[in-house]
Length: 325
Image (cartoon, rainbow, N blue to C red; front, top):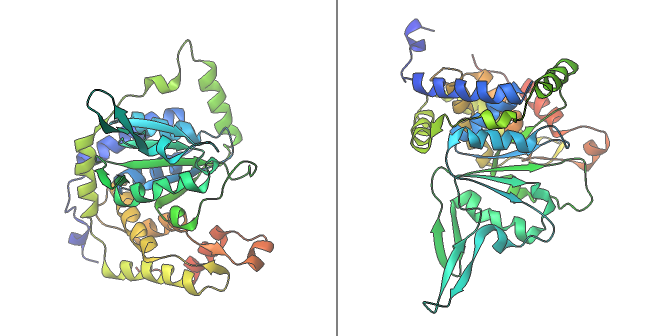
C-alpha cells in the first residue's frame, strides 16, 4: 500500500487523551482486566448496550459503576429481583390530588448510564420492559411516548453459574446488547496486586478517587467521530462472510442476524479509534467478533453435549475464512 493511505484523516487526539484517562483510572482499580476496560469504552463509543458476565466477586458491578463515574452524566442503578415489576423500572402514572390529573413519574431507566444488576433475576415480564427502551431509546406508557436523553447506555450484569431463582434472557433481548463481556478470574500475580492495593487503603475506597473525565457533549462528539471512520469494502465483505457462515454452520442451531454484522462494524470502528487509528484493520474485526457474536448464536444440542462453546465455533469460523490484507 502507498504510504499516504496511512496518513490520519481524522484528528483523534482529544478522543485518545480521554480514553487514556479512563484506562488509567479504571486500570488502577480493576487490575488485570485491560481487555474488559477497552470493551467497556468500545461499547460507550459505539453507542451500544453491554452485557457483563462473570462469577460473583470478579468486579462486574464495580466495572460498570466505575465507567459511569468516569463520565459526567446521569447514572442510575436497578437491582433486578424476582418480584420486580415493569413499572419499577419504567415508571408509573401517579394521581396528583392538587391538579386532579395523573402525572407520569419516571423510573430509574430514565438516565444516561443505567446499571441493571443481575438482569437474569427478574421474570420475563420485567425483562421485556427493556425491549423498547434498549432498541428505540423510548418508553411508551398509556399510549404516550417518552424519549430518552442521549447518551443512553444499559450496562447489565449476570452470573452464568447460578441457575436457582434466575430466568434465561430471551434471544430477542440478548440481540439488543452490542457486546457480551466475560470477566475471568485474575491470575496469581493480578490477585496479589489486588490484595496489595486494598491492604494499603486508609479510610477510603479506590472508587472514591474516580473523577469524571468526559462530559455528555464530549461523548456525543466522540461517537460522531467513530461513526465516520474508514472501513475498506473488502473488510465489510469479510464481516459479512463471518456472519453468513454462522447461519450455515452445522454446529449452530441459531445463526447471527444482520444486526450482528452492524454491531461488528460499529465495534471495530470504536476499537480502532481507541488505538489511535482512523481506519479499521482485520485485527480490529477479529478482536470484536467473539464478544459481538457469542450471545447471538446457539449451539446445536449435539455440539453442546460434546462440551463445545459458542466461542469455539466462532474461532473455527474465523480460521476458515481468508483474512483480507
